[in-house]
Length: 377
Image (cartoon, rainbow, N blue to C red; front, side, top):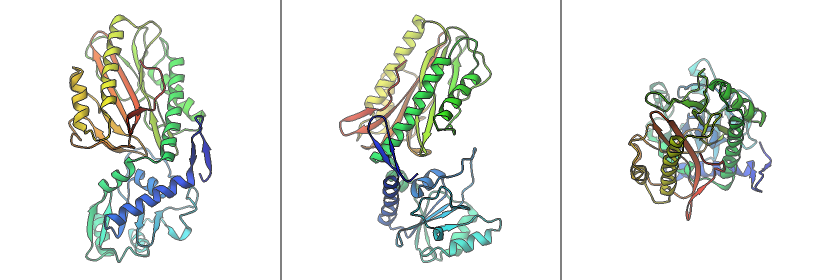
């Protein structure tokens, strides 16, 4: 996309400016870290640096040198077999192909101006084979873990990035509205998943970020969080988690609410929703610049809930972003102004069911700014 996209609130996404700002950030960060070259293989980092539209594939992919950034020349080189989806600032001479024979890939990398003379090379991942390739290509080089550098520059969202996130969230909330309209006793979780996929696809987002969208919470036996929808038929009065997400220009938005199927919520369900709301509000309030992951853990514990079964908060953007606060991780990580987070709370009670809420927010100068607009549980 090279033009400008208007949003309903008046904000506009200038995709050319968006790519140029991200490219400048990557080049500046690599130069400031003293890197002579940056070799990227994780799809989110490649999309951020290049702006190139990538072929969607399910599952995990092994590391490959998909993108090479040379700060000295200001050029970004991309592995691609075609020109479609490649932004105009990446010229045809900056593309290198995909080969069955690794020797041809090595030769293509060797032809990148500035790579063979590099002394400090940063990367976001590595395999033993590519480590040896680098050793052959770049004599006496120093290998640097660049994951922290990339995470830092990606955390602070520009205005155009924030507009993309808001559009993705709007699509997700449209999916939520469709799920709420379709929710009724007798429908299956998988049928509801189909309603969601059809809705976001019709709005131009055919690739869902996750299938963790719908599950009914049982009222008999222990209640645990589930990630995938099944063939389970939803019965009257059950609490059903609806957690749709959507992608817009590779940026992800998501929301989660819990609704009762075909009946007014019971007193037990209302009490459970109040617990979930208090836990969510406590987490949101703790998302302030200068606070740490430990502050979110303390906020959760202050509500009296038992240790969470899911992450409390994680970064939103392109693909997987930091931080991931949960399961004892990232307690010492500091939250910064400009970051966009998804915070979530899950509480359950045997005999009633479970309640899940997820809110998207931006850490502003005066505190957290909640971006989600859907009615609470």
